[in-house]
Image 1 (cartoon, rainbow, N blue to C red):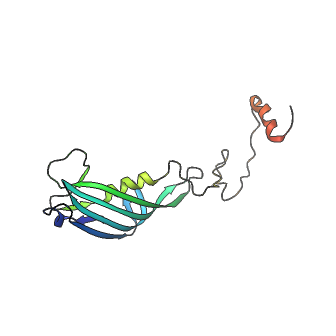
Image 2: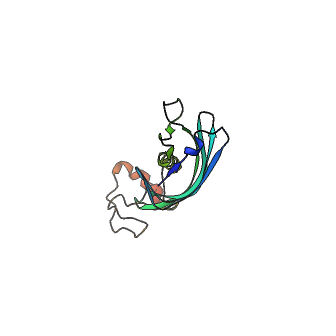
Image 3: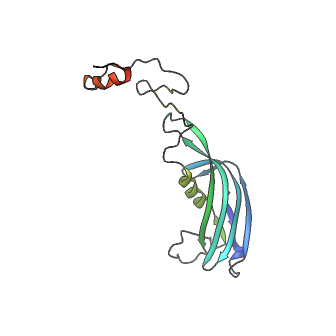
Length: 166
């Protein structure tokens, strides 16, 4: 679990801090999964809240946009967020402690996971994708389908591929 007891930081002056080592196995963070989370989170009491800073190493389960195969994407999540102390909400502070002083870091980590995923994730730079005719994954094998006849409106452009003058 990504829950931390920050109650020792509630009644202290700004500058006091706690550090937690994170070494978690597979995690389902609402709508995204990671294989592990490893790193350090440092919590510092600041004016009006608690600042959490740290870096977490992980591998994110994503799908390649070309071949649609799942793969693990390595990522380093940089965490920096101010946590409210609970009570009434404050402007600019999204996350807060529970009444007992516990903080669930899963939403913050989930946010950083989504930020670290590329817009178009690729399983590898030279991914061949899928055959547009039969759907064969071209990374595994060549497809046996034959492309259909060329639309006559595009025939003149086909000569550029073959080197013919037409």
